[in-house]
Picture (cartoon, helix red, strand yellow):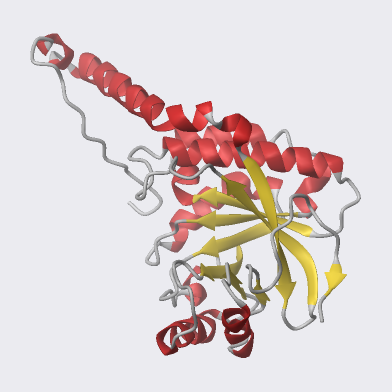
Length: 276
């Protein structure tokens, strides 16, 4: 069914405990125990390092207006803590999202008169899992009431072929707490027009592991804009590693660009300012 997301998990039942598979109730309890144990394992290192985790804020340039009026929050995690492929259950990503919301709340509470928008990342797996989504909703409800007018949720890890109903149904839970959603996709994404009813105000891609401008990168960046710039949808390019890459993104008409090639990340939420 569209809108239903299932995440698999592999676990082993000890041979000397066959009673754990005796019936539906026993099997359900066994699966729950295994799931909880796996989640605890995946988040153990993250929880231990929580005191060292912080947010950086990337100034996002509005290319047409040559103005920074938006910042992207970026959770800084000590190197080596994150597995290359993420966690199996999604628990680590959820823990990261909870930490991001908590740190962002501190920032917002300290800047009640701030004019810029704050773009806050959340993982798609977090909002499609009821368990994790409920945990995020608890944190979102603690944000200042006025934050819903200045907060944009940047949903990362969305599959390029995601059905519109999946986004629409899950975004509905979060929409009371933000001014809109920006979807994070691959540079090959070209379906923004098919997701217009999902609540997205923009589609984004990143530089990923690109370290320099190449003809293939420029082609991908250009195609992303051409394929996803219909209607009111805005296009974002995040993480431009250098000025050449940022300039390439500007030349193919992205609406918003950030990264080291645009401006360095800040340790705090900054002001609105013009760029040369």
